[in-house]
Length: 311
Image (cartoon, rainbow, N blue to C red):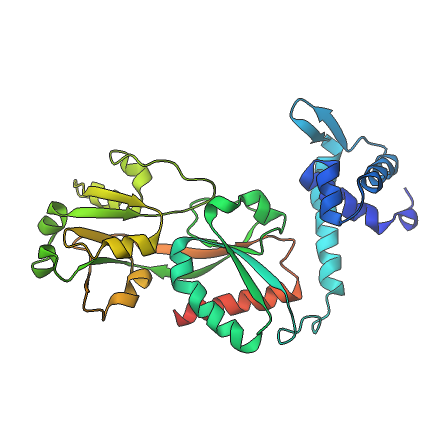
């Protein structure tokens, strides 16, 4: 194979085809017609003397040679993009870019307001599109359809870039009129009714089972370690809902401290440390290697980190 005869566009076609495994979707990604994409696949097959994608019962499947070439071609394209990326190719003050972020409700109620306040001052025309964990999946992040995901993750694909934004402890938020607030202890905590709130990872959530401690999360796992279990009255995936419900004088919401901090000086609430140890939680931002060297994305990641330091 004579490298001088290789059309660089074919490597881009190859990269997108291997990610999409579908000619139509690949054409949409590259903003070209389906016949043009089909012709590109034909040229790739001639170039590598390999089918590249073959039709199976699972749809279009990469050949063994295509799978071996994929990381090599991806690395070449990323390095080329980095080399061609001009340091001054992004001007935040004039940019009208829309950054799409998947943010958990926890991140949305703590980090996003500070982030928006910061970037509005220096980049007035930049917009944020905030999505929930049920709106997207890891594949969307990997393809760069979403600029960033901010959440607590138990497992991540190895290809993703990631950065810890902070570690957070827990706080019990309850009405100032809640009898438990006057003599707060493990016994009064266990006697009370509780609001469960959590949403991690991606995908549409499912119903919760109060008896399935392993799926209930950090608070209930910490209680299980000391042989105790709380009585959960309400399950919600929304922190603002949990905060509103905590105004009722018989309910307690045990929240990450940064989510509860807004109400430390609110006379309607009492903010108290949990009467048992709960391991801290880690909030991360993750992004695709496809966006890692993009000048606008580099700028945006820095804004997220700076906002996190201010929270």
